[in-house]
Each structure stands twice: as structure tokens, then as C-alpha cells.
Length: 367
Image (cartoon, rainbow, N blue to C red; front, side, top):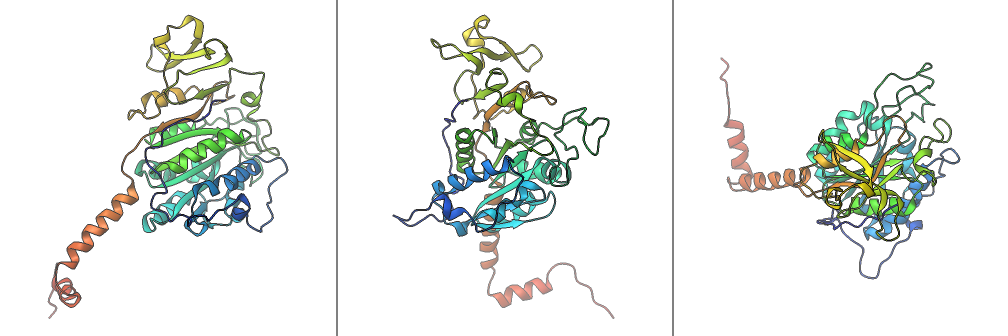
């Protein structure tokens, strides 16, 4: 899998107090005293370890980091981190995190959610957080099933999925979370896998460095209710399932040619406006798409995201799809408050302002 090599135009935690010079932290400092209680073999363990190991690299004080979760297996995350955290209500974690990020510019705000929590009851909250570009990092654990409530189909389950709630197969068309995020014009969109620690950590680092809403979909295996959901892309013998995305590099994948460093398959623009997979050897060099995660227009990134087969993941682009700078909701809201406060302060003493407020606007005289 490719490494993540992308310039970081702005630091998402720039306003958050950092450690004093010479002060250090380790993964143990971010591990709480709570017993970690997930099923044996759950992919959540790998993500937790990666996050605990990664957080010290931010150089931030633990009291200036907050994790907000909703409802689901992944939502136990705040208990296992020695930071501030909130186990909130079903689907509403992005809304609560929006309030925190807007009120407290000195905090690094994270949301941990699952495919059911974020895309079903929380779908509306998620897309509005993405379009507003609130300064937070959203980690969506996608195991394509409801795990906590024991195996019902979820908004990302494939058509025909037989579960306790769909005994003869699901007829719902599933969401593609990356496509959804790009459609909401999220400023940072990425996908990674629980079992690839190096790739996962690199994506998390880029997400934390981004100022605005960072959305990271994490393919995460549920060994009890949906075991093997991602076997197709984890199979080392299936070299054509994963399509690595590296900013500034031609998008090729599959069996690598030692001379050129290119895979035997490549992406080119299709006749219908999308993208197509072709043999690299048959494609002109200038026809192969060069990945541009910093393109202000998300159209190409969206077309690439559509390569993911909603049913069986026969094609799965992986990495950072989009990373662009645009104003954040919380920065702009605080700026408006500052301007309003200055305007109010210029209108006399507190007593004078109160009198003007009482006497202003519509009034009535009652006989």
C-alpha cells in the first residue's frame, strides 16, 4: 500500500496549547485504567492502539483533547483514552462536537462513530458537519453491520445481505461513505484499513493536521456478526482490489513493474465523465490520472470513490481523496462574536446599554 505524502497546508490544532519544552508523552499516558471490552479479534483494538500511539505525536496536553462518540461498539472509545471525552446520544456526536469546537478553540475535537450511528439516525448531523467545515476529526468505523445490537444490516451492508433483520436479504442500496462526504464537499476525506497500522497512522496524522472537518472512513472487521467483510481487499494474492492514492502520483495498482514502479492497472478518464480501469501497458502516459487531492473541484475524487463496489469491494481506492483549505465554521462564528462584542462595547456603559435594550424594539402601552 502507498504511503501518505501530502503537504499539510494548515495545522488543525494550531490554536491548542502544546506541551512545555522538554515535556514528553507516550501511548501509556493516553491509555485509561478502564478494561477494554470488545469481542476478541475486533478491529477496534487495532484502531485504539494506533490512536493511543499517535496522540503523543501531536504534542498536545491531554486536557486539551476531547473525544465525542455516539452509540455503538466504536462509541466506547472515550472510555479507553485518558483524555476528556463524552459518550453522547445516537447519531448526534457531530452536533455535540460542533458546539465544543465553536465554544472552545483551545481544544482538539474528535468524533468516533460507526456506519450505523453516523449514516442512519445520524446521517443528517454528519452531512451538515461536513458542509459547515467545523474544525474536528471524524473517524467512521465501517464494519458494514450493526454490532452492538447483534447483527442487523446497516446503511453500508451490501444488497442481498442476510442478517437478523433481513432474513431473505437486504433490498436497501448501501451508502458509499467517501462518496457521501465528497458530495457534502468535505474539505478532507480519506479511507484506511484497521489492519494496516502504518497506513492508518499516516492518514490520522494528515487528518489531525488539517484545519476543518477531517472525515476518515476506517474499514473495520466485526469477527462476530460480519467476519471477513473485507477479505477481498486484505488478500495479498488479490493485488487488484486495492487502489492506492498518493497525491501527485499516477494512479496505478496491481502487480508492480520493477522498471517503472507502476502497477499493471491504471485509472483513466471514461467516456461518460467518470473513471475507468485499464491495462497500464495499453494506456498513454499522459492519459493516466495523476491524483490531485488538493483540487478545489471534488468531481474527479468523487468519480474515483465510485469505483468501490457497494456489494463486494472488488475495487477499493484507499488513501486521501481530498484535502483542501476553506474557512471553518467555528473560526467564522468566533469572528462574528468578536465583531459584535466590539460593537456593543462601543455603545456606552453597561447601564446605558441595558436601558437602550429595554426601550428598544417594539413596545406596547397597556391601559
